[in-house]
Amino acid sequence: MAWDANFEFRDCPWCGLTNTRLDVKTINQKITRRDGVDRYWATVGCPSCGSAVLIEHGDPNSRYRSPITVVPAGREVEASVRHLPEDVERYYLGAMRVLRVGVPDAAAVQLRRTLEAAAAHFGIRERVLMKSIEKLIEDGHVTQSFAPVLHHIRAVGNVGAHASDENVDQATAEGALRFTTQLLRNLFEVPGELNDLTKGPAQTALPPAPGGGPAVGGTPAGSSS
Image (cartoon, rainbow, N blue to C red; front, side, top):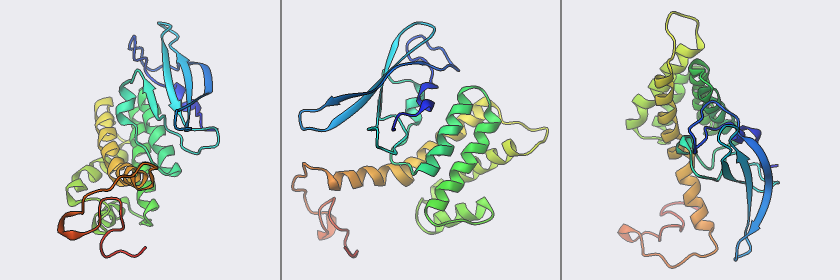
């Protein structure tokens, strides 16, 4: 089913209680839109203030494991990324979960694994992560401007993974999480959202692209169908 117990681990957006697990009251509550599309909601409650939070999740047969909508939105929603492959999402959600409970070293390691899984999704499986990062840039999956960000996440992950006098503090891990979020949106969410637009039921005629190419959502110039 699409509901994931990890959704329960979130800060309360009402009273600000952190490092907690909200109580599940209902899941898989289906509401059908006017156009026939089903949406599924869960209700969770804060054990401190008793306030309720609505979480929209995928249908019971979906493999999508991130909340679609959270009302009211908490801080963790800022880090949500849609269209993540399951293997990438597993490490990414793990990083957020351990960071939320105050274990930044573990979060750093999970973020490093997130990078490795993201690169592997594009067929890049170098033995050294630095080489995978260089290959991601070389193949055009991300721009050169992302290089310092990628190497920062890698370096923070290295500190978290090895026993030494140096530790990853909460602020550093949160910064690495923000960088990772932007990277994943660039790699997966933006292409996924654009793909959804091309498959949407209510497409309208779009103006031609600059240079006489096809309209946005059509087949890119020079590509084969």
